[in-house]
Image (cartoon, rainbow, N blue to C red; front, side, top):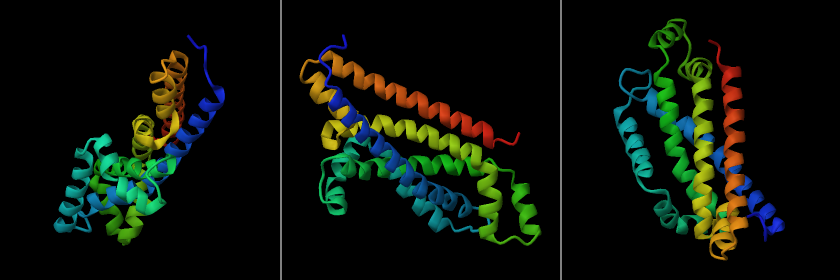
Length: 218
């Protein structure tokens, strides 16, 4: 079953997948956390209430979440070419990966922040804390376990997305499984690429669960 495997090709594909997932996860967090914060604090009853901003951001997030990932990849080809000079390879694939994952993660951050007791926020306001201090020293620390848990789920989803991106020229294990496995009738390559994706998911989930337990103060 595992005969005819080009281990050099597998190692290259694994490296490309790790690159895509790590870069995409980093920028998903950098974009998703501030977006999730703004979705929360600009809503009715919060200290930066601005329904125009909240509804505009919510609409944008919902649009990106509604578009199937494979369609988003094709739609963002021009954007990827403009930003990185090509529509092929793992670097170009990070553009639709981030665009697909950041809005999804922003909603998870928003949900985590909304679960914080309003009394904690009101107590911070009564003590004279500024809005930025409430975000940095109250909201984010209180919600950090849920935020990390959400990032773990998002990272696992990015592994799946990266495999789909590989089929349309993004490289990585998805590309190797499709070209050197499925199209070449090489079951060994197909199985080993699938197995490596499963192992990546397991490792990321274990690390994420460990971090959540360390951060949870309960």
